Length: 191
Image 1 (cartoon, helix red, strand yellow):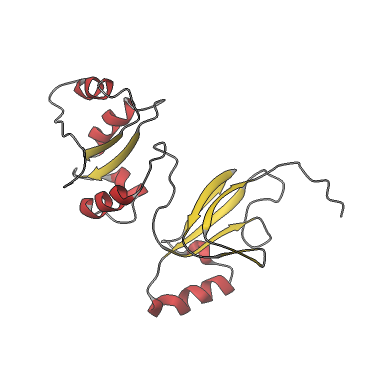
Image 2 (cartoon, rainbow, N blue to C red):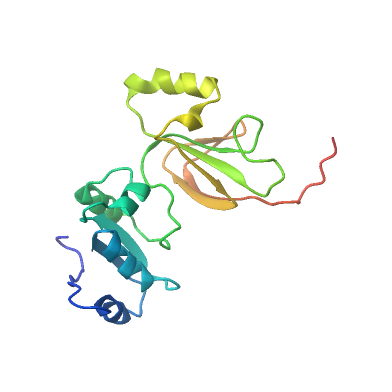
């Protein structure tokens, strides 16, 4: 944390977290250092605020951290989130790491129903080149989503930031920030 503006608080009694949060009316990033129980206390006081929260796993089970983080190293999570410029609401950030593949699908083999107002986001995290043939095989077999490290989520909209060029239905797009939005019932397609 050297060179950064921060304060450390220890929760010392019931509702202490509530008092701490009240001291920050401006948008603030909170780091919850503890287990699932303590993280629950923190987020209960951040719901319906503009504050951001990061969960650093230092508890016994850390079930929630296991569900949202690809890695369980508090140091790695701290470093990655400190390098992040802004923050999003607690449930807004789905994935923040390097990827081998990020695809948005609404088709026959991958994707939700074409007219349900949702699109499937499929993310294959960065993989070692030695395992590339395995994932290529899974993609060709149309079975990538069965891999345990692949993230699949149905969304109505999302924001993607990429440092690399991307392919949008065969068209090359430059590195940028893209806001993708499903527009349900916006086209009269005749078949």
